[in-house]
Length: 383
Ligand code: NIG
Ligand code: FE
Image 1 (cartoon, rainbow, N blue to C red):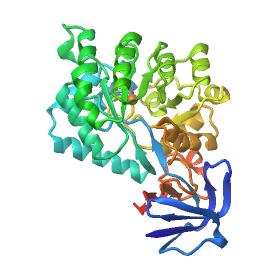
Image 2 (cartoon, rainbow, N blue to C red):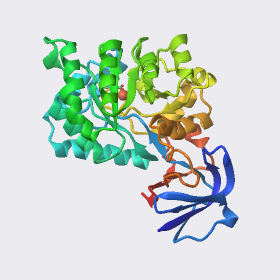
Image 3 (cartoon, rainbow, N blue to C red):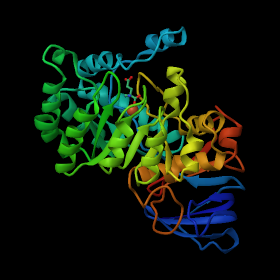
């Protein structure tokens, strides 16, 4: 089945050869984009979607989410907004609820969030485990995540679970890089470690990432969210695809990222929900670093599935222009997942695109909080 989208007022291609086009059309065949050009010259197709002068952009690539969990932590959020600090300690509350939930409860909740994300233009979603923290519960989380996406990430090293409090972190690290990794790896493409205060230190994180790499998984790191630390430099040293959060960076961290192909993934929903200072996205872009924007959707630090919300925050609070923020939310996410078929509208790319209820991508930040996604095409299918 082929489909042509005509009368596109503004087409954001993220393709250096094509740039931003006016009065454009896009043809998709099956799940692939096959033609991009002037609307007046668009070839016929089985189906026709008239964009009526609206803006069209690649579907959002949300390269960082934690969708497999049960329960919520609204009370914790309320307390924070009344002055409490975020420490990550609440992760264990979600672990308890997640372990107690049935497969179907977890599946229903994750599906609801994934379809919420899709309605807001997210056509690719990375999903992490990390609220199971036992061999069986991490494996199950990843099995359920794999029902929703091919971009699955093993985050057994989220925190040390309470049953290991007496035995010590190193014993848990051995479990994660041994038996847990062995079981989880069959459902995971990536491995991630929360390398931060109250979670895992540089040496522990290195050991876990090394085991993951040996098992054939790609690397990602939760780095420098709660304070300065070794996470970002470790991510670069180990060739991770992405260092995520990057809230507290010093010059050496920025230099390391600048000389690497590790993407800096920024998660402004987390700063919003933990009332923390935002990362300096301007500084990263000016240093030539590839920046991605993602939601970090989780019940503790960022309970949003909305990429448009993250775009608006990045513009208002992190010094990005609307164009840079949209690039980070699309091509940036694709780079963070090392996917060359996503985040662009050009022949050969996957047919994931969104038609806005607006004439320009500027409206995503200009009209914050307004539902501006009129149509979503995912794998070539209208959703
Ligand atoms: O990315 N930083 C670590 N993990 C999540 C938060 C998890 C939670 O609070 O439940 C994050 O922000
Ligand atoms: Fe996260």
